[in-house]
Amino acid sequence: MNLRWMFLLLLGSASPTFAAGIDIEIEIPQIDVAEYHRPYVAAWIEDDARALKAQVFVWYQQRATKEGEGTKWLPDMRQWWRRGGRELKVPVDGVTGATRPPGRHAVHLDATSAPLLTLAPGNYRLVVEAAREVGGREVLDIAFVWPPTRTETTRVSGQHEISAIALELIP
Image (cartoon, rainbow, N blue to C red; front, side, top):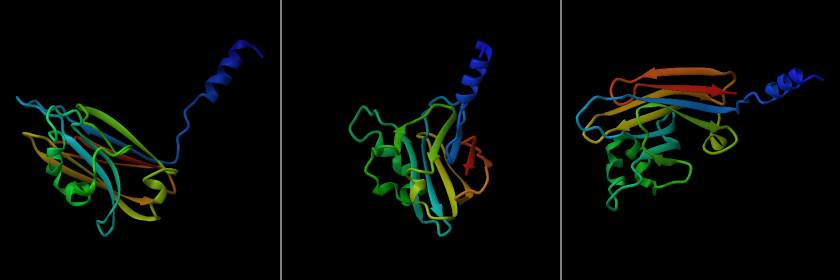
């Protein structure tokens, strides 16, 4: 076998494989204001009755200069706070993380691990909420059916604190 064919064979075997689950892309806008603070962003999954089924992630200021300073703004994400945020003892491994700068940010949820592993078949909504100190607050949601039977992408656009969210279901 010549070197060219070996390279093509190796390249083909190294192509990415996509695990079943959900891919989420969140775009945080660049806002031109005098005092800019990165937004706190939370995402969770609700059922048709709007009951919390899973916390997906919470991005907040983890390196605070004073004790409790970073978590003091978490209640500003009012809908998330009422839907289960107040019961979380942050930080939570695999759920909480640092705030993100403006731009696109991707999150993959694998079907073989939490939170999707325990999600019963049915209709759900991915809800994403963002709030900024000296800024606004915005909540967006996307309906989906779990488990997916085909690859499907849904997008919604925000107006202030979130530019857009894309949800891709991968069977």
